Amino acid sequence: MPTDAQGLRAAYGVPAFIRRESDSELWRYDGMSCAAFFFLYLEGGAYRIRHAETSPRGRDMPADPDCLRSLIVPSGGAPASGPML
Image (cartoon, rainbow, N blue to C red; front, side, top):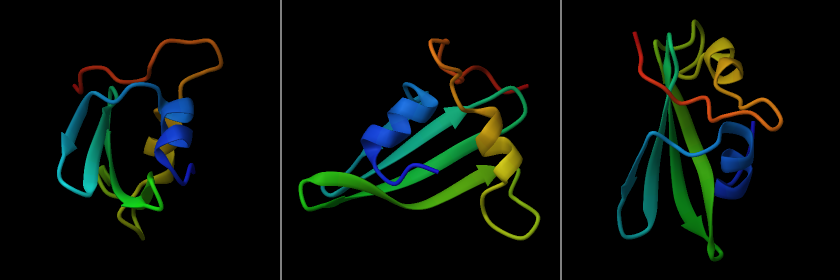
């Protein structure tokens, strides 16, 4: 999983939604069967991921690895974000 905003965009493309606050951002990616939420905080001039969750949640953790993998943008492909069913 990426650790910063640049890596997140490279892996998942443009988020479906971004909420900005003074020193943090929430990025949401929507897939066909799940959504991922990345919580980024400003550290040393760059936004770094501090927490990730999915809906539905993972079995033993807040983020379901299968959901996160399903949202990765294939090389040269379109963003994974799309309407959830």
